[in-house]
Length: 512
Image (cartoon, rainbow, N blue to C red; front, side, top):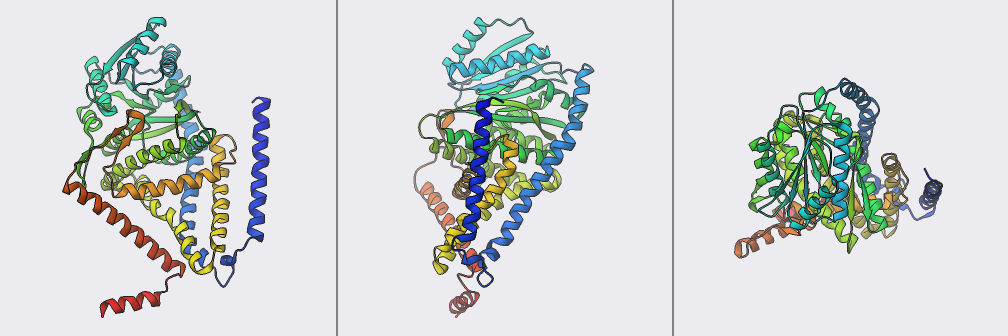
């Protein structure tokens, strides 16, 4: 670590101590009537939900530590021994999907693949799915200027229909035509994913140890070219991902196979059912009818493996780096990402739950269910604070803000362990991310067909016009308002803002 980096870390640590001291003073001196014995309604309102949420979070943390410190190191020793004894896949098939990527990023991606091929000595085919001729020129010029004395074949596959899913389907069909051996592996990569040296050596032998293993996904880091706060936000998101992925892997499943870098058993990905799932995955909804998925191909591949009984793992010591070029408004970019990710989660969550706990595994099934429950539990805090402030004054809001900052600071202490550095902004970004994500999910819950992918040529779901669409839109608005009204009503009752006697009186009046 450089002297400048050490100075930065110490500065962040001192700022963290100052924040903790300020919180202590705030708890001691700011108006906090809601915490006393006579009016401790706030604790009663949030105590049960908060205890459940933080115990659940602690469960993930403990499971993550067990996997990272006990289970995976043993698995790593066995995998390294298999590699040392000479086990190798017959061939590695790289699938890189790119769309109008910056040339220097494409060159870095290709160079990282060549470095891996050079290191392992395993024959490889590089399938590049392109959506624009500009990408093809960059690829052709790069290989013309970097001839590789390696057993590598490069195949460029131009998509003939818009959308990443069609590009993946065409590449997989090309991969099938070129032939797949039993031990071959397929590496799924985005056009901005750069492999760290040793990824194949760390991931490939895991498939030799377990015939049921269908895919692995790796650790990730983002390099943001844009606002500094977005680098902190990405590091926070990836820290959360590391914690959750390690917890899930203890059940030999994960909740997504990240499209930025995942490695599959190649014989699975060339099955016709797998390809059709990627190409034309769709959902039938009672309000919006039958519609195709635009994004979320990583969720579709995950669901296919889950449905067919395959195991999945997270490999914490294998890394991929992604370059995030943020142009324009960073807040808009975050919102669009949350819209896309939340939509993918909601569209796939219901059908994963339908598989049942025996198919998914009890813990993973509950994790999927918890994703849907947490949409509402996250909102009970601000709703309760707003409701109580109407009867008890603004001191409630002050105390709630102190509570939020204190709890998110405690959660951030664990996230610093996974991020590998201290960010003073983590507590603030964590709460803002949770609140914004919940609001977006509530909005999308009744507009499940709404899809937009800014990073992929600004793809949008097409809706019909006319009376049917206006009815669907009005019904979605009504259901959103209805469910939010129920949330406010139940939370207000729990907070004591609305008494049961008042509810009974109104019920009696309505009944009379």
